[in-house]
Structure formats: structure tokens, C-alpha cells
Length: 184
Image (tube, rainbow, N blue to C red; front, top):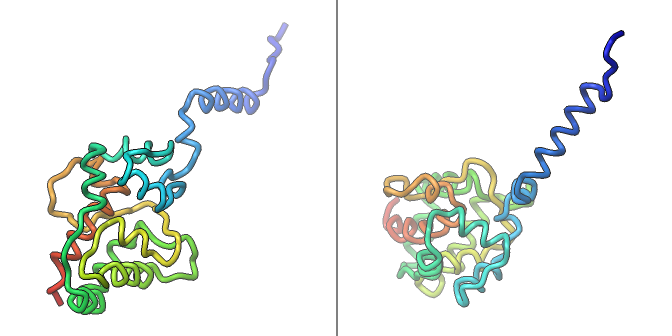
């Protein structure tokens, strides 16, 4: 007498997939946590060291300590507004903006990422200083992370976790801009 199967193969696969998924952390299914973190969340973290669940996940996965992140996100760099503007409008500056917006750009497809980031940088530099938090607060539209995020400081020796962290992107951006402001 042939053995009768209780479940068909597709049903068994779905069942096993469900058991596997149930055991995975919620973050795996939640999408990119950076998309669920607002500038206000980051600002609150910088000022008070308090972070919600999504920001905690980013902090934990960044490879940086909380103190390093808080200091780096609020660190201010003196710049010349004219020099920053000239750099960002030069061919070298345009390549820089294209590079740093490859994996990070506006959620709306109707907004040019380089133009939106340039606008935020210029607005933040209007007081002759820039910071990661200042650039974030000046973004004209919501940005999100996609694959291929690249930090501007490619030559810096940091861990792979730090190199791929969305928070590292912002930690290095103002320093790279300050260093590049006189390049054309």
C-alpha cells in the first residue's frame, strides 16, 4: 500500500518558510531602518542620547560607539560659503555629488539627488559652518538609503561595518566637503 502524503510539497515549503521567518528578528522584515528614522530622531539622539528602536538598530550596526556618533553628527566645520558653492558647481564637485548620492537620494523620483543635496549643503554653510546634523536638517525633501551607499572618505581606515553604515555617510560628509572646498 503506497504511503499517503499528508502535505503537498508546496504546502510543506510554505510551512517551513513560515517557521523560518517566525524565528528571524523583526528588523529583517522591517526594511531599511534608516528610512524610518527622522531628522528629529537623530537630533534628539545627539542632544539627549535617547533613540527609538529604528535608530538604536542603526547605532548598533554602525560600528561606532554612541559617544562617537553623537560627537561626529554635531561636529561643526568652518567653511567658506563661496568656496563650497564653487566646488559643488565645478565638474569635480558634480562628480563628488554624483558619487555620494549613488546609494542615498530623495524618496521622490522627481527630485535630482545631487541638486537636493547641494541645496542642503549650501543652506547649512550659509553661517560659514557645516555639520552632519545641519545638512540633514536642511534637506529639502526626505532622503532614503538604497544599495551602494558610499562614504566620501574612501582612504580612511575603518571597519567594514563602519564603511557601510548610513550613519558613517553623514559622519564623513562635512569633513570631506571642508577638505574639498578649494578643489576645482
